Image (cartoon, rainbow, N blue to C red):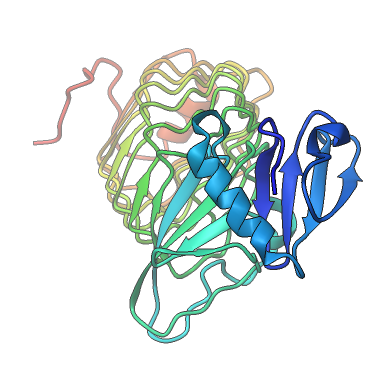
Length: 340
């Protein structure tokens, strides 16, 4: 049996093999029940192999023997660490992975699974899950929302170059302690609303590689990250952001925030932006510029320490009014200023 060498294995299933070619004629020598199942999707074909297991073996051998015709390698993947006291649901209570993100295959503790469902279960404490996609993901809204058993996420091999929305991407990942975002491409992202909301076990986040020049919404981005003590936002471009309300609300372990580079010219809502940051000693807002439409429905500095030092431009009248409610602010402190 032979197969045109331009055809590629597209996807494996328990009883079928899918091929991709330029035309049906290219696959004319392939034995099996070939039928075109998507005319608009690069001339893909499905071959029924339920009664022809020999086809699968031949195709695998063919791809190993033909260097320029290898099985399609994953161009992106996410590795997760899962922990649970008993049977644990990897993907949380939602159906998002099944209906929207649906990976092409998974590796659960090193074993490949081609039949994808929205839930997987384990009976041991530590597990590794790799989710694999052959095509770029275009949106990440709520991607891991409510996945309460995930402890580590590695996105270093995940292609987000086409993603425009990361709203609630890690929202309520309450056991998440480590996340690798070093290669994540955020250049097209317009919304980071609630992106890390209630990640209550995260202690540090380095987002210095994030490109945020297209982002307009940072509402509640880090709200209720109650263990977060280190946050690097040194390269954030906020020139298009309009909403920053409760952005750092209830980040009770933060002691300092350097937002020197923040451009707030377009921000219209800062309600409770730092509310509940009860250990915040120093905050640099030196380049904050006040929008004439700025709304502050509840104090920006509600429940912060009385002796907090705030560096702020004197032209920010509405924010200055908020500062008068607390005991201390300083217009001339340097970036390296520390409370003694």
